[in-house]
Amino acid sequence: MAQLILLGTGAALSDATREHTYLVVKGEREAILIDCAGSPVQRLLKAGVALDQIDHIILTHHHPDHIYGLSVLLLGMWLAGRKKPLSIYGLADTLRATRALMRAFEWERFKNFFPIEFHRVPQRYHNAHLVTAEFSVSSAPTRHIIPTIAVRIEARASRRAITYSSDTEVLDDVVNLARGSYILVHEATTLDTDSNGHTSARQAGEQATRADVKKLVLVHLPPECDVRAWRTAAQSTFTGTVIVGKDLMRLRF
Image 1 (cartoon, rainbow, N blue to C red):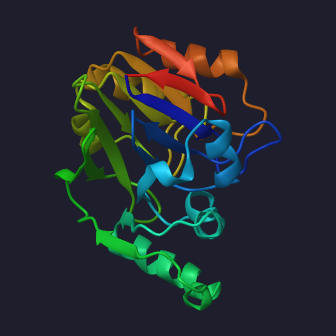
Image 2: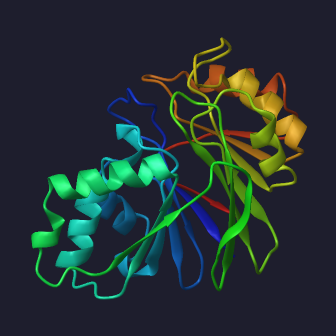
Image 3: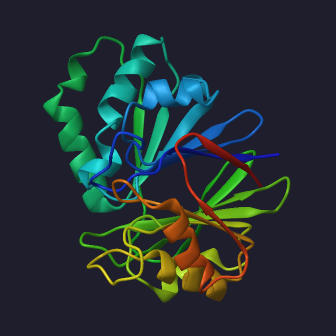
């Protein structure tokens, strides 16, 4: 059975208990990384995900808390002897920023660096733009401060899906992408108040209800998040299972 592993669950201003939000979906033989923050090599190894399992990285947008770990992950893969290509997916602006980040570290000077293939994701609903032996990935645009995508990953064996909202305000496109998912991983930067470019825990519950999902997992949590209060706020608008995410939490789907 596929696993969703929360590598980090904090908002852009995190705290001592949480890294910034990023996650990995792990199958029997492969894994897909979604965003790349924190200390990715350490976190992946703690999660039991070998660096060589990751052939695909999806970047939802290029705010620092979502991509700043990419350079050290690529360095770690190279030092570990990676030879096979790595595919990176993102919107045009995200890929531009990613290339600029890599140029800043002069990655072309690293001898025998493994091939990196960039894949532009259109800023519209895009069904199954990545299909692997174990997973199928779709995406949709969100409403954030900069262009951003939400991501849906379906396990081909179980036919169950997880959807990750990334950073977004309340939006129909995210609901439509998540519809019928087993797990919706939704940002909850605030408790119950509106926030420019973000969603509250109460609103995340509303999104989960509209999408008819089984479980709601709250991430992108503020410093010193009151777990009970966040769970209660989401439960006020969603009757399914509500989980306040913790770093290195595992969920099967």
